Amino acid sequence: MCIQYLLHPVQLTLITMAVYSSYTTFVTWLLTLGFTEHMIFAMMITLVHTASYVVFGGSYLFIERSGLLLEFKIKREQYQEPDKLLLKELFKDAMSLHFVQTPIFMALYYPMYKYVGMPSLLFELPTFFSLWSGFAFCGVVSDVGFYWTHRAIHHPALYWIHKKHHEFTGTISFAAEFADPLESLLEAILPSMTAAMLMKSPFLVTLIWMSLRLSQVYEHHSGYCFYPLEKRSLATKIVLVLRQIVFCQFPYNAMQHDHHHTASQGNFGEPWLDWTFGTMDYWLALGGIEGYCEKTGFVAESARPSFAGVKHCKGPKMQISTGAKARRLSRELSKKAGPTSGWKAE
Image 1 (cartoon, rainbow, N blue to C red):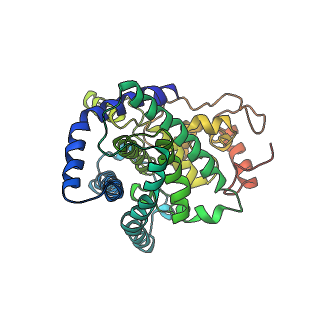
Image 2: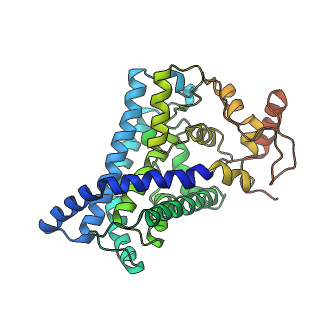
């Protein structure tokens, strides 16, 4: 928890400072062409969003089609593989999201950004601490906001908003944003964009912050878990560690979110939030990462701590253990729970 909210803002701040000059040159060029700041705001967010989708989603598609990194792929049952009709619907949804919904949402968001005091698109570079604190604030607010909105739309009265997203029981990167437009607004845009808006962050900060969040979302739905590093060659270890540092990724989150899609129970957001608010019980009952690796036949044996063996601070008072006992408990809990296991009497 401390690493992601303290170290990651440092990385993002350094990236912001490195690309500031190029950003300024590009925005100045667009202004000389006659584009307004309002137009540039919507255009650049749409561009970054679409480019991230193509680059990250395309990368995972290439990895899968080429057969590379099979040891990191989470195994799927036949029923989890998307059929042609679902993929066709995904393509239509992606076109609508990137070329209709995003430009409209951002065009409407710009007046709110200006109202709260966002500086001009051509701004003076803030101090290192100012940039760092802005990214740190965005991280906390975005994670908390996503957790509670995601958990809320799993409530029986609101699940109709989220049901479309769970049509992919075996997730793929391109389907990370396969959702109802209302969900896209409530769960994705509001938590991430509002955090930057409240900090009156420069536009470049918003762009870089959005790029990070998108890369994480696409990985969490990729069906690949790049962990652990044991028994890997030195070259593989170096590449994967550098990748984790550059993209601020915790790859075990992909395994946790994959469980959310396959079981539709708990694991609504960052692990510390699920653990704190009592929505990690089903994940722990399964044995955490180790148990899910065993269940899915994941090749790599995980060495990542999964909170297994600790008492939960919320929900049923139980001692969690791995093995047969945990699997029996998981089955018992699953019989009592539907897609809204986070909503129970406590």
